[in-house]
Amino acid sequence: MMTEAPISRWQQWRMPLLIALILGIYVYARQSGLFADTHPEQIRNAVQQWGVYGVIFYVLIFCAGQLMHVPGIIFVITAGLIYGQIWGVAIALLGAAVGMSVTFMVVRIVGGTPVKKTKRPYIEKLLAKLHSRPITHIALIRLVVSTAPWLNYMLALSTVRFREYFVGSMLGIILPVTGVVYFTDVLIAQLF
Image 1: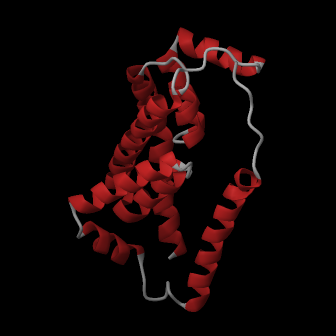
Image 2: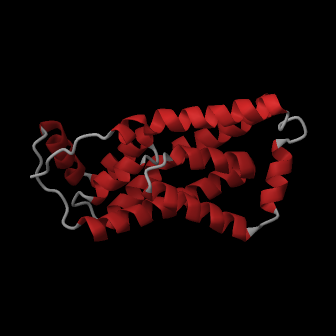
């Protein structure tokens, strides 16, 4: 049986602190004039000069972020900022695919045996549905929460096979990742 661990203060404040930090950096950069001479095209050109090494670096950072519970949406937005709409979607999907796969494998190897029973009835129902049609249910969950690291951990600790996890995950993230990259590119064009 699985018992629920108490939530630490760090877990409670991690996301609000991350948002505050990002907003603080943005406000500081705006006020200091850093954005006055910097445009998204300049950033894109600088990173794109790295070529394939830039993409490899992005994928490695995405993997590390997923393992450390950094929301995947941050990396998806970054792909949109750096690579634009078309390449941004492709590179974000690549980063997500590798990041989610690495997280799944690490949790499976380190986490031990998959959880089959739990004290929570709603999790029990979710696991039962997940096992009846895993690809469909994983795709639907991913459609809502996209690249959320907690979902990688939860699915890795279920009895779902990697193939089902991967196919369901990729089917489920296509629409959210595409939408986020597209709107990030549009929003950045409006801000600068």
